[in-house]
Length: 160
Image (cartoon, rainbow, N blue to C red; front, side, top):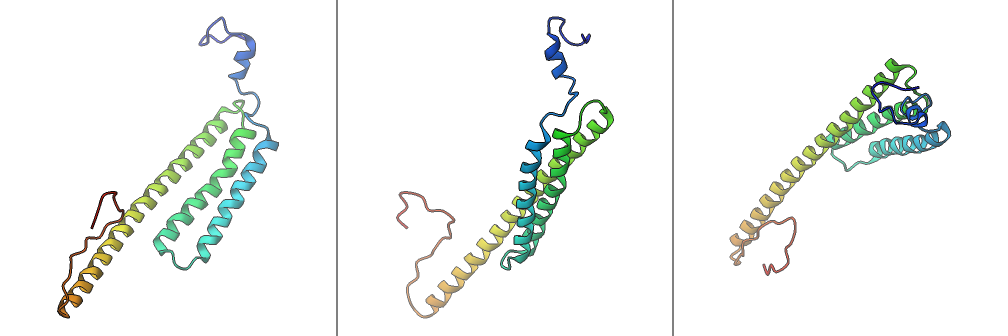
């Protein structure tokens, strides 16, 4: 079995590895791992629904990511434990679907990061306004006030 696009010096055992006549991984190995992943994702969705102090936008974004992950897991099982190149159309369609869902998960993660950054900026502005109001009240009482700058982190060597 020699293919024209492969070097003529390759042994047949190497060439048979490239045809993928059998699935990449055994089903008995992939299914338990996938089941554990799906249980963790489902638990994450349930936990997110029960938490009360999380912003609703963040909850929706994270539930969406977990649901996409729940839909992706069985496809990955099929891809690595059942699919072969004997049916190239199905093999390619499953790969395309997995790649699209992975892309969706990455995009959801980016949306989550942007949303978190937006929440952080809003929280910083609210805290800075509260500090200014507290300083104004203290100043109105006649006490000397040292201006305070809001920092997220402290740096070594700062004496303020």
